[in-house]
Structures are given as structure tokens and as C-alpha cells.
Image 1: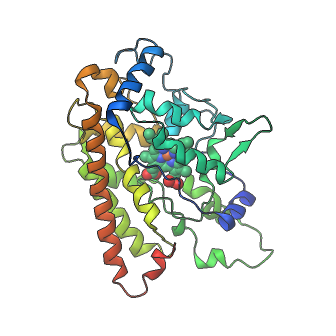
Image 2: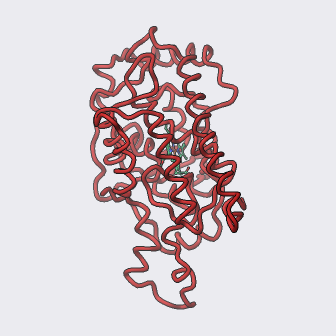
Image 3: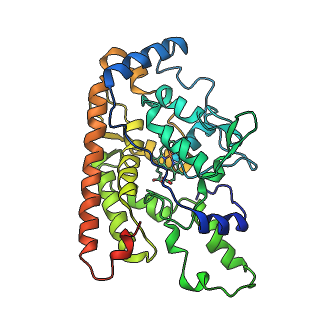
Length: 329
Ligand code: HEM
């Protein structure tokens, strides 16, 4: 089990009351693959000569220490664990995160400027008097009483918010058990969810986008059936559809086929928030043989498949009596 930083109870209760706004990772609608490929080429030249063999040199994985903090975003945690941002997870200039997306993932910055701006808007980023915009990664857990784009491996917050806990009388002290339910439980990768995902691998070696799409379907059905606080908006649909594509497309190592990756890379991502030791983005690994436009098209296709299964599950749910609450936002 992987455990990360714990905000205080006060922070939890305050953010549960005021929270909203999804993190909004999205594939840009106006993505111009040729323009971006040219920009990326220039960026890689100015960043210095790298090859697949030395890509991670100087950015080796180091597990977080006792005082380091991490958040719910797997790839920001990866950035910290590989030293691309402060390994402590504190005082991270928030726009350094989208700025790293081209270098590390072959994605345009614009794909992640929106979540960066939303983190500022949500009050998760300290806005300094000199214009510094610094993020402590643990703050990304704020708004914990809400559905969070149906995480692949973190438990639904709604499962902990029982009527009994929500009706604790004024002045009642949080007991040890309640503290666990209110504050601690959701910062830990849920082993069952992780196993549900990994066990979809048919050969024990690879995982596909299709299997991530199946995991998404299962997560939705299960959440609708068992989490009475589960809410899923149109915005969540697009965000989740994108988030379920990211791990496998980033960690895949084929020059043309973007639909699969290694199972152990997915396990390493979720258990340790790490790149495999031989990681390199495809534009580094394959140079001119890598087609940015095929990559963009594949991404859009996988995302649309995900949107499709979400919409089907939502439609099915809407037909059920009493299900309207799940679409209130
Ligand atoms: C400043 C930029 C970013 C911010 C503020 C951010 C924030 C978050 C937050 C708060 C979550 C939790 C779920 C949610 O609320 O949607 C999340 C999940 C996620 N993020 Fe990010 N993120 C950023 C950039 C990135 C980047 C660069 C990637 C990958 C290239 C990424 C990939 C993901 C994925 C795959 C999830 C889903 C995790 C799950 O299923 O549990 N994010 N992010």
C-alpha cells in the first residue's frame, strides 16, 4: 500500500464545504500536430542531446522520504520522484508542470495549463506578492468530499462519507476510527482497485487501452451501484476519458502502435509513481520515425472510446429510478 501526505482535519472539512471544479486534464481540441512537432524538435535541441539510453540520467527514481508530500496526480508524483520538480513536493512553481509535458510525455503544454490554472483558482496554489505561484502537491487532494474523475486506483471519497459520519453531533470529537474515515483513507492506493486493473492483462505482460476502457466501465458501474454520493458531470466525463488514456499511452514503447504498454510499467506507476528505468518519450526513443500526428489521432480515438462507454453507463443509470442525483452537477 502506498500512503501519502495527510492534510489536517480542519482543511478537510473546509474544503469539503467549499469544494468544486474538476482538474480538467484534456486533450486540446485545436491540437496542431505539425506545429507542435516542430516546436518539440527545437525544444529538444535546446535542452541538449539526449537518447533513450541516457534520458533519465540525473533524474533517477528516488522514493519520497518521510517529510516529502505527494498528491493524487500520478504523473506529478512521478515528476517529483524523478527530481524534475522539487523532490520534497513542496513549493513547486505550478506552471513548471505543464512546461515539462512536452519534454517528458510528447504532449503540448496547453494540455495541462487548464488544471494548473484551476489549481490556482481552487486556492491550492500560494500566490506570492512577487507573482510566485507555488504548489504543495498534497494540496491537490483538496475537495475530498467530491468524486474525483473516478480514479483508476484511489477509492471514491463518497464511500467513506456515510450518513452516520456526516451526522456526527456538533462538538463530538473525532475518534481514531473517524479520523481514518474522514482524513486518511483516500490517500492510499486501493489494492483491490489496482488488482482489478492489473488482472485485466491477458498475458501478464502487457496492458492495453481497451483494458483501461474496461476498467473505466467497471469503475463506473460499481460507483453507481455502491456509492450513494457518487456524482458524475459532463466535465468529469471528458476529464476521466482523458485520464484513462494517459498512463498507457505515456508508458508504451512501440513506435507506431500506441494501444499497449507493459503491465509492469503500469504497476510501477501506481505502486511507486515511477518511470521504468529505460523510460524515454517516443520522440526521443524513435526520432523521425515517430509521427506526432498519428500519436495525436490515436489519443483522440482512445479518448472518444472512453467518452462513449461513460455516456452509455450514464444513460443506463439515468433510466433507473432515483438515479437523477448522480447527474446534478
Ligand atoms: C498543473 C498540472 C496538473 C494538475 C494541477 C493536476 C491535478 C490532478 C488532480 C487534482 C488529479 C486527481 C483527480 C482529479 O481531480 O481530476 C489528477 C489526476 C490525474 N492526473 Fe493530473 N494534474 C496535472 C498535470 C498532469 C499531467 C502533466 C499528467 C500526465 C501527463 C496528469 C495525469 C493525470 C492522471 C492520469 C490522473 C488520473 C489519476 C487517477 O486515475 O487516479 N496530470 N491530476
